[in-house]
Length: 89
Image 1 (cartoon, rainbow, N blue to C red):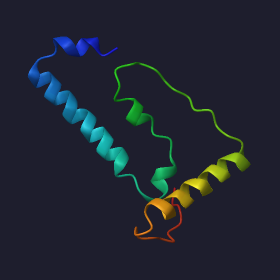
Image 2: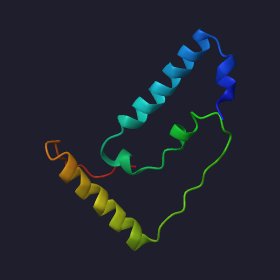
Image 3: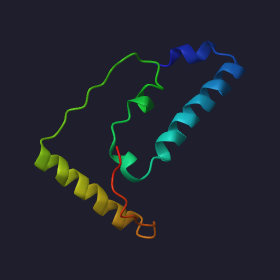
């Protein structure tokens, strides 16, 4: 895997690093309700042509995961601002 990089020029490698960094930044900068969404664009940055389909938990298990994620934000980042803005599709 990734053997094709061995033959790339310096310019090609720099362009690839910039492309990957941009994708990572877009994912990193997700905020609010966008954090809850499926992010196939991030996986699409890889050269493998796959279409990974997630296993979707049943509602009670899914909601428990959402609650645990939100609790982890309280534990790991209690200084972050909070909002009561509702999701707008």
